[in-house]
Image 1 (cartoon, rainbow, N blue to C red):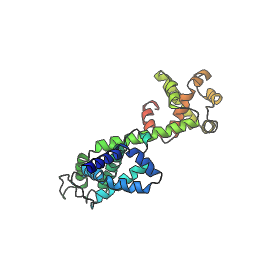
Image 2 (tube, rainbow, N blue to C red):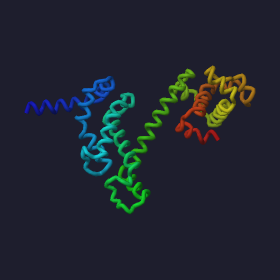
Image 3 (cartoon, rainbow, N blue to C red):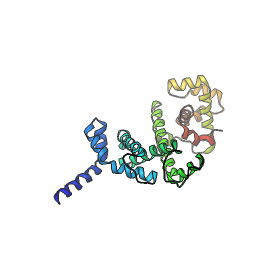
Length: 249
């Protein structure tokens, strides 16, 4: 009875400290890596099974894909993501298995109630329904948005700006925002103005005052916002550009 209790307690502690264990593995603890991979095979099987809608054996290709994904999740995990390791790993495993099935859909023995006469489009529709692709897509988009925001924040720092600056200095009225965006578009589309911005990390206010119908005071007041919008326009920020699309026409 005591041995059973000790085993239960050990497993509970592993679960409670899995985030810490991931950090130790990232620092080079290979022995711990092998232990975690072995201990969490049941979790990998369960996660893969929830995608494939059938029992998963360790000899199945899908299990191998899931275990590799779990391994990758250990090294990619960061507590800064704001999610538990288990939640993060589950998303990674499902994503990898779904990608594998989508790439090999014609040949996979998956439980989608589809016969061999179905064409690829029909099989894909079945797979989409069975694998809860909407949830997968939402997670993928959320991850991409988060990564884009992090990249944008890093870029803002180069210009001594922050998200707080962007929020507090955003024009209150719609027409003012539209005007600021039009100035940002002019800066990015004019080589001399863009070069000044990128090199000096500030707006070429004198030159802008000559080219736009706004006073120096107006440009100064919206300076931080104009710079931030310029960064979005000239950068690889898909989601932020999409947000601005309606106002940038």
